[in-house]
Amino acid sequence: MKIRSTALLCALALVVAACGSRLSEDDLASGAGTGGGAVVTTPAGSGTSGAGITEGEGDTGPKVGTLPVPCGEAEGGGAPAKPNSTDPGVSADTIKIAVISDRAAVVKVPTASIEESMQAFVDFCNGFGGINGRKLELTKIDSKLFSHLEATKEACDAGVFAIVGSGSVTDNQGAQQMVDCGLIEVPAYTVTAAKGMSERLVAPLPNPSDAYNVGPARFMAEEHPDAIKKAAIIHGKIDAVDVQARRVKEAYEAEGFTFIYDKQTEVVQENYVAEAKAMKDAGVEYFTMVSSTQETVKMLHDMKVQGVDPEVIDLGQQFYDPEMLAEPGAEGAFVLLNTTPFEEVSSSKALQAYLAAYDAVNSKGKPEPTSLGVQAFSAGLLWATATKAVGDDLTRANVLAELKKVKEWDGGGLHFRSDPGDNHVATCFMYSQIVDGKWVRYTPKKAGTWTCDEAFALPLTGDYGSGAKAGS
Image (cartoon, rainbow, N blue to C red; front, side, top):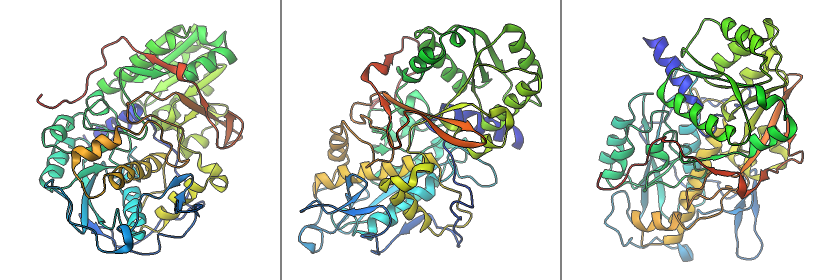
């Protein structure tokens, strides 16, 4: 049962907006320490300086990349005023927030580094003086892979002001509970329609279920017009994964793809020899897979052994993972990214700031940074920007209203430009390719850039679920 549960979790990673690469231990050593408790308060420290932080011109103050740091002392440098709020989690001195995630434990999970990245953000923000002088207190809640409802109830009962930087693969379970108890949320990512289309949630990288970014599909259609007529898709036998596979097919078929092989497999298989042989017999030239990294590595291995050599191997964001680099069958594969690649850290001030803050976290068993962790840090910055803007009139309703005004967001350069306020589907993409066992930017060629076009937003007609709403 433990093995089955682990496999289910890994397969569910597929529907996450981005389950990204971790730096190797050689690139960035993990921290060590006693680990955090449920609630952590960090005093003001040296957050006003450090890697990636630049001084703005005039009165703009320090920046994370291109984003003014939304954290700082109260106006005039005095004590913060008593807030005009009766909402939970707010006082004259503090703002209490929670992060919900599936902790890594002994299993490699797609949410690894979410919790630590939010601790990094809290430490970072408190180092500047908090938000308008109010220090942040972070409550960390484990959704235990399949206990998101219980975790959300815990957040409701903990008296926090908001959930920030969260990410759980079964986030539909507690989606309605979050709305019903009056919380607001700025997640690192969302998985299901119930969470991603919730009316009390604003995400730095929205993932609405009723639309799809077809930019990558159009790119492949232009670059490989013959291959897309002989496409294959493999996906695990789980409802959430099946929904994602159906969304991919609807979107890509609208761009001229023909799927001549569509196979639903077991969540975990000993091998994929039969599938590889079937694709070879069918003459597949374009291959994609909606599954865990470990299963996809098996698939690519068996494809290579069986002599299956499609013109295109096209994989989602979750496969930006060092595990892929060790598999010879993955050579030449294209992998989508939506956060700035770790390979480009030297030219990204925003990514430098994140990694410096993350490196400073003293947490036992801290995982290597991931692109989902980058998204969590961006979520913290987005929430803090809105919270700072409302000043002392600090209510959940006011912060949510301020969040919905944000129509352009890139976390200062942590990821591509998005429209959180309108929950708009992504209209940017970037491909990296595995070349000689390393990640190499493929398109667009220039570091720090993305291919963007509003025309990439394709409305979907299929029924993929709806969001949690008040009064439901």
